[in-house]
Length: 273
Ligand SMILES: NC(=O)C1=CN([C@@H]2O[C@H](COP(=O)(O)OP(=O)(O)OC[C@H]3O[C@@H](n4cnc5c(N)ncnc54)[C@H](O)[C@@H]3O)[C@@H](O)[C@H]2O)C=CC1
Ligand SMILES: O=C(O)[C@@H]1CCC=N1
Image (cartoon, rainbow, N blue to C red; front, side, top):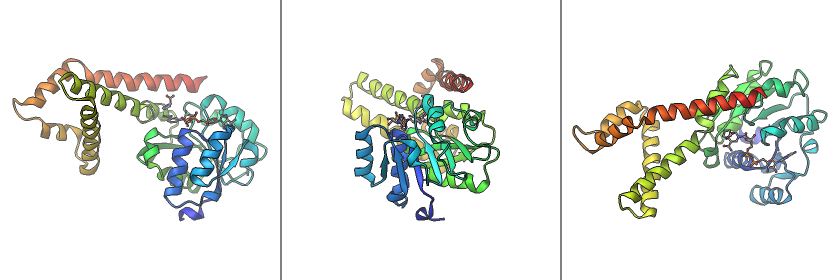
């Protein structure tokens, strides 16, 4: 199926994540006039129309009436309100894709007809530059073809993976959903460190960002385990092992593991409400 054979796609919410996915779809060849966006803020509607040529709607129920895919890209707290608004106009076979953190498939199904196809997804913000990581979890009654359609849409903004056990999405949220913030924090700290050793800030920023990017590309493109690549940087008695030793002494591994676990637990709490 090529991008211009995709069904009409309605986005509910035209914020950061919706914009990223719309950009990805259009870059991959989707037709803008087959993308509908319901967004209450007039300025955001106009920006999306001007930038991409998508069709704007001030409210959700009219946007979904002939859409084969509906992407819920609103804040978690208003997903249920939106679902009650669209439940009557939604096509029976429309695939509902939710990217809202912590909103469970059961919570969505309680407001939809029992046969409505649903896929819950946890994406991340590098989707904005087509380098996202999205993990999909289909509701049990969703068909493989409906899951494939959702996967195709998220493939436009980066890599995708699928889990069948919905509870794993909390761990996904802790690692790849929230993870970009940990990496940005590390980049900021590396740059501060460079400044503390006398580098000018713009150069320190450049070194920090390119070191993270280059190291990520090296891991991704060689497929080598991080431990192997780390040992290649670490000369006997050299500079790197001196730096690595202080990182180990300050417990950086445990700190990162605790960060992912804290976000994992918070995601579980949000989902249990
Ligand atoms: N930002 C992130 O790192 C990630 C966010 N998510 C999830 O993505 C979802 C969207 O997040 P963002 O795009 O960052 O938020 P955002 O605040 O940029 O976008 C939400 C948009 O929904 C609009 N909206 C509010 N009420 C509406 C309604 N009744 N109908 C239609 N639109 C309405 C708002 O005006 C806003 O433009 C959230 O549920 C979040 O949990 C998931 C993974 C990562
Ligand atoms: O912080 C949050 O709740 C959302 C979910 C993953 C990234 N941002």
